[in-house]
Length: 373
Image 1 (cartoon, helix red, strand yellow):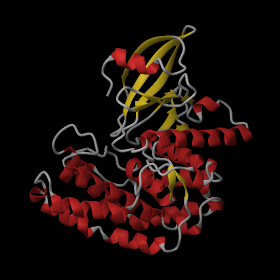
Image 2: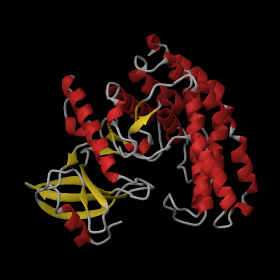
Image 3: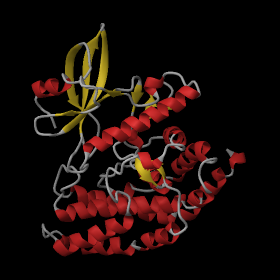
């Protein structure tokens, strides 16, 4: 993270931002990139920007992320223009050019930085407080998916190979058990056994995958805090954090919404007794999402959305567990057992989803009938 204001101003000076710099401070709750909220005074008005350093450990080719983001946002902007959608600056991300016409800037260490116009009059939440938020955020993701339904997947780069590849995540988990570099597995035998119990989810997915799910442009990080909500109306405004946009399957995006919308606690909450999948929130989520996508998704996709929830929650659980075993090399941690508690949290959510899977299936069927939406 940039902590020196002079360094921050030096990076910003390369971008086409006019006016007087006011201040910059850390922003957001993401685990991966360093992000700053920057304020400028322009013609007597305060204008906000987001300055981000792209994590080169996670994203091996940061330039591809910027290219994907630019291509996707331009495509969405064109679609919104065609339907005469007002106030485009609040409905789709706006990337700021540097003075050489590029949309990223390299610093002296070779790190990539980019700047995005802050969405005015918007807010985000890290956990869903009510069904209205769940509906609006899911509806925003549905629109995002709909606007990209005609985007050529061949023109979108793979920014992280095997990002949502459950079989590969299991393989990496098994390898971490063999290497055990920090001697941490001796203290967690029950959790390791629990993880292996859920390998059946991957078996179910492999059977489904043989049916050839469509490849689409997917967000791949559909957390609730990646949707900007209108401060006054609470309507979903804009989908943000497009670093992981790439070709994928819809089950992954839906599953991550379930993971981050339906639990009443944050993913690193330590009281696991409070972690559960809330059916009313799930109901609002499905309604908001399928309102936009019933005409675009296949029956095979819709009929397996609940499996998508199991896949992503389990995947995230073993990712946290693997990172703990390896010594916390991927996710930012605030204390030694942070990733371990995150993993336990996700396993608790997965158990709750298993318990309520039949009811979840009924809700999906209710809203998959277009006449009932």
